[in-house]
Amino acid sequence: MPPFSKVWALIIHGEWASTFEDIAYRRTGLSLRARLNIVLQNLSHALRRPISFAIPYYLTVEPASICNLQCPVCPCGLHKTIRNPAILPLADFKRLIDDIGEYLVLIQMWEWGEPFMNPDICEMIAYARR
Image (cartoon, rainbow, N blue to C red; front, side, top):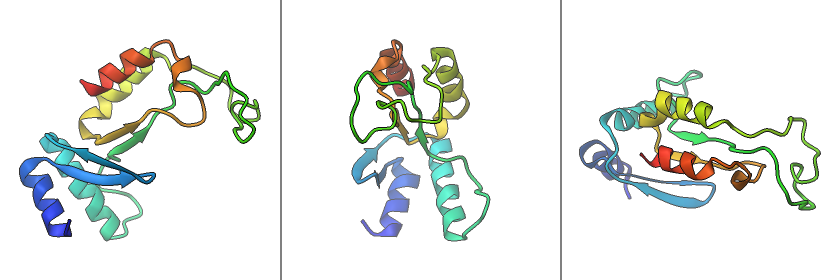
């Protein structure tokens, strides 16, 4: 899609398509704040600003920094991370989403740990979708 068409689709229709870690994503019905945030973020990038005009619109959350597997290439499963194993409390996740959720286009809910080790993962996903 040509850049102008992509911006037009974002501003007028609230549609945004991009790739993240080689996975294609498409969002529709974005709020006006999310639309403006994407425009400002891309403007900051185009102007090579050291400090962005906007809030990041992709968020990585790690629901659990623990894992019950022992994959040979994973520092988490082998217990070789420098972080302490932890479970993200649901209240902290809700507070984060309440603060910046309307600006987000994508929430990646994994990193090194196994997200399903968090007993509240289903509620987190449902809260983020709302």
